[in-house]
Amino acid sequence: MQLNLIEIWHGMGWPVRAVVIVLTAQALACITVATDRLGLLVVANRRAKKFSKRVAPLVHAHDYAGVLAVARETAGLHLARFVEAALGFFESRRRAGDGDARAIELTRRSVDRRAETLTDELNRGMNILASTGSTAPFVGLLGTVLGIINAFKLISANGSGGIGTIGAAIGESLIVTGYGLVVAIPTVLLYNALTHRIDGYEANLLRTLGELLDRLEMGEWDAKAPSSSVRAPKADSERAKDTRTASARTHAA
Image (cartoon, rainbow, N blue to C red; front, side, top):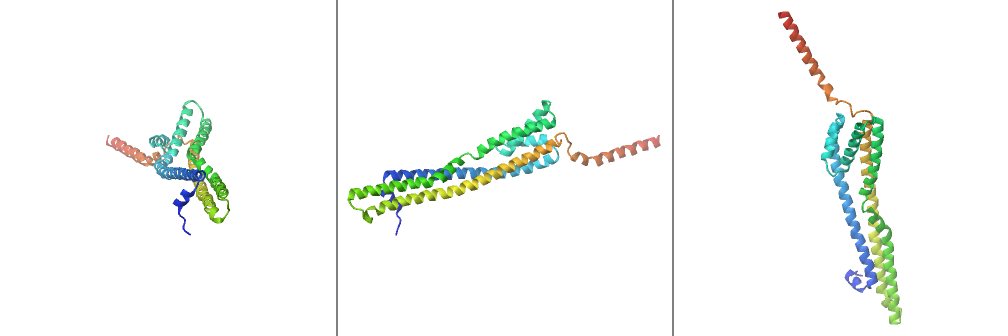
C-alpha cells in the first residue's frame, strides 16, 4: 500500500485541510522558537565562560573596579549585565552612606528583581511550545471528527455505506490524527529539554553572582590585592641597600 500525500491532500475537504494547515503552522512556529532559544543558550554559555575566565584574576586580586569595567565592556551578555548592575548598585549605595551590610541586602533585592526579568526573557516563546504540545493531538482529533462527518455525508449522498465509499475519507481523517501526534510528541520533548537547559543556565548565573556578593559581604571591596604583598621583599631589599649606603658614608666621613 502506497501513501500518496498529494492525492490525500486533494481528497480532503477544506475543513480537514484547515486543520492540517493549523498543525503545520504550529510545527513551524515550534521549530523557530526552539532554534532561537537553543542558539541563544549555546552562544550565551560560550560567552559566559570567556567572561568568567577574564574576570577571575580580577576577582582574585579584589579588583572589583576592574571587574565592573570589564562587565561594562561586554555587551549583550546576561552575566555581564548582572555583574555590572550588582556592582554598580552596591557602589552607589555605599556612596549614599549605607554600610556594607545594608548595601549588600539592597543589592541582593535588586538582583532578585532582575532575575524575574531574566526568567521572562529566557522563556520568551516557550509558551508556544507548551501550547502546541498540549493542543496538537486535539487539533488532529478535530480533523478526524471532520473527516468522519465528511464520510457520513458521502454515505448520505450515495445511498450506500460500503467500504469503497467511505474508506478513503476515514483513512484521511485518521492520518490527520497521526499528524497531530507527530507534531505534539517532538514538541513536548523539545519543551522539556529547553526548559531544563534554561533553568540550568539561570541557576549557574545566579550562583556565580551570589558568590560575588558573598565576597563583597566579607569586605573584599576595600581589600587590597594580594599582589601588593609580593612586592614587599623587593621593598625590603631596597631599604636594606639604602641602610648599607648610609653606613658606608658614615664610615667614610
